[in-house]
Amino acid sequence: MSDTIVRPTFYEGEILPASDLIAAVDSGRGQMARHERYLHSWGIASGLELVPKSATDAKNNKYASVQLTAGIAVDGTGREIVVPEDVALNPSDFASMVNGKKDIWYPVFLSGRDESAVASSMLTGACSSSLPTQIKENYDISYGTPGSELSLDEQTAPGFLDGPADGAASPWLVLLGFVEWNPDVSLFFDAKGSVPDSSPVSPRYVGVNAAEVVSGSGTLQLSTHPQGSPDAKNIMALEIHETSDGEMVFGKQNAQGAVTPVLTVTAKGDLTIAGKFSSAVKPGSVQVQSGIASDGIVLPLPPGVTSAMQADIHVHVTPRMVDYPQPPLPVLVAGESWIFIPLECYVDPTRLVHCRIRWIKMPAGGPMLEAPALCDFTIVAAVAASGG
Amino acid sequence: MSAQMSFVFVKQTGHVLAVLTQAAGAELQATDVATPALSVRGFWDAGTQAFEDSIFKLTPDLLDVYTQDVLSPAETSPRTYSVDKEKKSVMLLSSPVKALTATSQNVHLELAIATGSKTKVFVICTTADPDNPDVRQPEISGTETKFDFAVGPLPSQSYVLALVAGYLPILAQVP
Image (cartoon, rainbow over all chains, first blue to last red; front, side, top):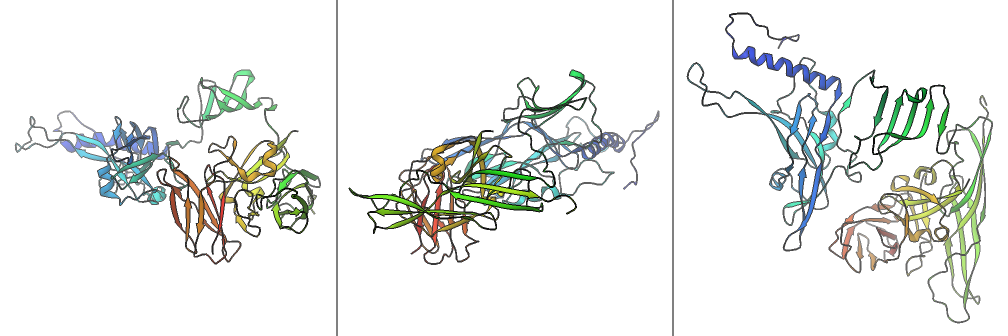
């Protein structure tokens, strides 16, 4: 292997071997792959969503046909993976790779793979032989066991001199989402892009590695989804623009791609916010919060005060005497009624509220029942002055 | 500033377990109101049995907080409310779970009719160590009405609280 990048060059009258032509193609591919690897981060660039379509068979078994939408991803070797049109996930492929069980989410991966095209019958080589003159940049869809998606970031990237991988030996896996399996009918049951209750990992999208991002338009915007993306409920955006004498605005992106600002900073440093403002707590100050809390809650500290601060905390609670729902049992008969009295109301050192009432069935002598109750609280935090 | 009510609810099913009302301030997180744990006891307001000494401790990772304008009825009966999946509103629960029974190693749950779609369930059981309850978070199919979940082994007289998304809470005790 060369210890530096080489590219082929040619001269008039040269007998052109195939290897030089291949090197000319590889030089460009290698350069593009290094750009993708080091100026961008790998992931899905566009499309590639799993779309389930639920159905029921004649025996009332539920299943789903799952489509992968067309799109493009770039893997960690800098290889472009193109899925040119929507494709259905094949349940037989899943069954051959995974022993699928009910109610479990299995990761679905995409990887790129070079595949030789069929040899040309028209062109013959020196010994009348014929070899393929094209490489198909194909893709594979594969399935893993639950948890196999956790180690995708540990895939080994190529060295600085290397071009994109051919996907033959250990293909670079790009997570597309997850599928559920219905083993009763050996078909998919459902599909999702992410399943936060089952896996902390979700599909990753391409990024940019840059120390400087410059816009030539006078406006620079960062947003959480492409404009008009059907999947995004709230597209949040941060925009720097030169209009209005220069501003930075943050807020939701509207259908036209403009930011509806809830926070604006002008070039002069004026700050305007549409919501609440919480500031850091001043040392030596006293912060107070009051309210009503259920039994069992840990009382929150006043806004801005954290348990890490050296604050003296004082809590005052009183039982809240309101119209609590009466015990369902035993059922009252004529002449009977329930009354309640406060049984306990205090806050322990962890600020946990202990507040109970006792229901007494009248006339006295009946059963007594205890129930959680509400308390009014006031919590005072005296924040230590700096330096002691 | 107007008062805001924070609903502390089970992340898995949306069931509200406690509420806190205070003047609008910083948005509360589960860690603010449940560290080290939310203590849930006296769970007799929804079932037909009275359990006074059951205490379930739920750590913040099992919980979430939703804040909105004050909803007065939820103050005294928070456990009959549920927060929706999108965390945008609370709703009053009215459908009871048909039955819940528990043994040392199994919890059996019955619904009157199948839910029609996969439904999340949260089961918490008291154990010999009050700070370490046995927590299970299964999903039930939408086509069946009887479900069994492996638990424990639980000590005798343990309490089991089952929360089925969209249904009132229900309790049982291990014989």
